[in-house]
Image 1 (cartoon, one colour):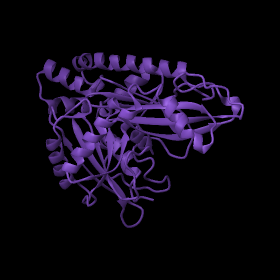
Image 2 (cartoon, rainbow, N blue to C red; image 1 turned 90 degrees about the vertical axis):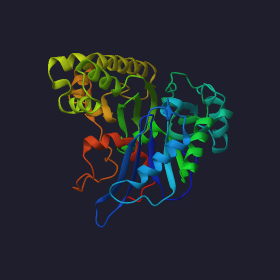
Image 3 (cartoon, one colour; image 1 turned 135 degrees about the vertical axis):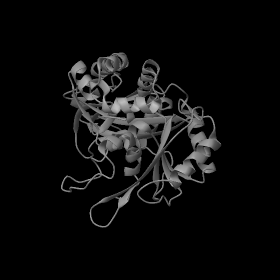
Amino acid sequence: MLNIFSTKIDAFALNISDTSLKVAQLGNKAGHSSRFIYGQSEIPEGIIEQGEIKKENELADLIKKTISEVKGGKIKSKYVAVSLPEEKSFVDVLRLPNLKEGEIEQAVLFEAANYIPIPLDEVYFDFEIVKRSPLSEISGTAAGKVAPPDSSGGSMEVLIAATPKKIVDSYASMLKIAGLKPFFMEVESLSLSRALIKQGVSHRPLLIIDFGQFRTVFVIFVDQSLRFSSTIPVASKELDNLLMKQLNISLAEAEKIKQTEGLWGDSKILDIIVPVLTDLTEQIKKHLDYYHSHSPLNHVPHFVEKIVLCGGGANLKGLASFLADALKIRIELGNPWVNVFSAQHKEILPVSLEESVSYATAIGLALSVSLYD
């Protein structure tokens, strides 16, 4: 976990996007069932734009209202784990020679300056060692840069994350207005990975696609770590706008069509939806090609073999089949509960899997601070 603010205090999770906020907290009931406290609200246009808070007071009021209306229990803590906007953050994996503990931080900071496009003194920055390898496995960084030879033997992969101070400070200021205290702040892709990928297991390369209202996030995950993330403007909202305009229907009706008919509806609906999904497919192909051409050779296999869908747009009926046919890759709907419920238990999910995927980031945040064990 890459923390900007950190201390050993119980907290709840708050996932904030341009259009919605979601609250989540995990804990225990009697026995083996999980308690899930959750709630969400739509954020009116203009309060947040591309991850930047424009109206702190209005957002703070909305957060307080949402917390007061949660389901499944009550939020009592004032400490909160908050997602930071992916489109304003930087996440990458560096490959360095194996170094002594006292040498790592300076080397990471020196190398990170080549990856982060703004000065390091203008960002909050953290890092985590995700893998150490013997010398024979040195082949290059996740971004395609070759590490220098290391005569002492071996290399190390370091996950770095950074967000501009002006963004983080704005979120902290807004939380103070809301009467809350930041427990930690984390880039969204890290929370997504924690929720959707089984922890403690080495994974073959996979791609997480968070198909949101105003943007889509791509996250490549290999072994036990995130390797690459990117954000594109293709979004579920485009489908809503096209359906409303061409069918002369309301937003609620457009959402219903996406979830009940989608790509399995009549040909008129299909004609409206497919161009946006074709654009999404082309963007996926470009990102996969980039990763495949830059991934270290020691990742065997180094080709993405599975795509995991999440986000509100993932509930578009027929989306998984469409992408599987177009990309020839196995597609599955993400399960944000994979690290919450043990395989031995037969618990009923607190909310449906379809609703859960829109809470993936919030659940990932909540996992790091929950009382669940």
